[in-house]
Amino acid sequence: MPMNTKLTRRRFLWLGTAAAALSGCATTRRGGSANSRLDIGVIGVANQGHYNLSNVASENIVALCDVDSLFLSAAGEKFPQAQRFTDFRRMLDRVKMDAVVVATPDHTHAVAAVWAIDTLRHVYCEKPLARTISEARIITDKARRHGRVTQLGTQIHAGSNYRRVVECVQSGAIGPVREVHVWVGATYGGMERPVEQPPVPPTLDYDLWLGPVAARPYSPEYLPAQWRNWWAFGGGALADFGCHFMDLPHWALDLQTPISAEVVDGPPVHPESTPPWLVVRYEYPARGPQPPVQLTWYHGGRTPELLEQGGDFTWRSGVLFVGDRGRLISDYTRHLLLPEEAFRQFQRPAPFIPDSVGHHKEWIDACKTGAPTTCSFDYSGPLTEAVLLGNVAYRAGCRVEWDPQRMRAANCPAADQYVHHEYRRGWRI
Image (cartoon, rainbow, N blue to C red):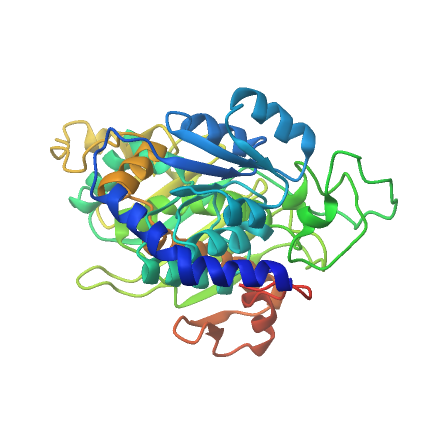
């Protein structure tokens, strides 16, 4: 975070004198009535931020923050009681609130989430949890240390389809699973860094948008919607959709930390732009009686050959579990047991995973009562780390043999620069 003296002093005073009151408020909320309303601040109010804002609008929206005054004004018209800020640090410093929604681009997730956690607010953060593995680990550790209620924005996790898939897999419908394939049709990147330098729009505070990353000239190729094309701000299709689709095998198979990640196929590494297509293979160790798992990721039009063997499937994105006694294919809203003729008489297990009250509502209720969330950072932090490890292997150009305790590739020192964050002067977490 910026080491501005005035802000640092304010932050120190907040932690040293006001934290007790804040903590007391949070404790009351977590042990209090589910009918009480939270005071929530939202950082990033356009696009996905607008979606998140609409899903927490049942609570008291006390503060709004966005680096673009046009987006901020539009949100402010819907929530006129909320104070408005362009700098999230000032919002968190000046407004009393119980909880914070972080819906910024990936490169500012960590600085915003850590500031909120350090000042004892509960946090809902969009996925992936951070741009780098080191940031994700810091956020996860701080949330656990401070006892904050957290939820990652993997909204599909709350749907009934994923629950039924997990029940089928965990009840042994297709037998032990040793192989999983995950593919998405999305593509980003494959671009050259912009050379034109148009003026910064008068409504945009571009320096605040850059936040902790190295300064570079403004380009409309970066924002508001194109930032996933660039390593400086995001991680392409893998970082965007990995936490959604790899969530399902992580949940169903109790996967946590891969022991390796290796690129099977992909374009040459570009120093600036993310790969438009990629195939990455992860290896996960055995978990008790469950066997080791090989998980292969595909994006940008690449799909597993096994799809053709299982039937005429044209699913643009999905997950394929390969078990000893069958297969299961799923996307966000549907799933099939394969081969279909072998499972026509299959009796599904009685549901044992309760339906969700809603992804955002889970978090809201947990902030008030202390009930668990299904995508807390304890679960989604390691999921994010696993997803990002594929990008690390791609950029480092080696098979990464992963040491999660030391957060390093035991066999590939070149990977370190892509594991650990590096901020421009004045920012830290």
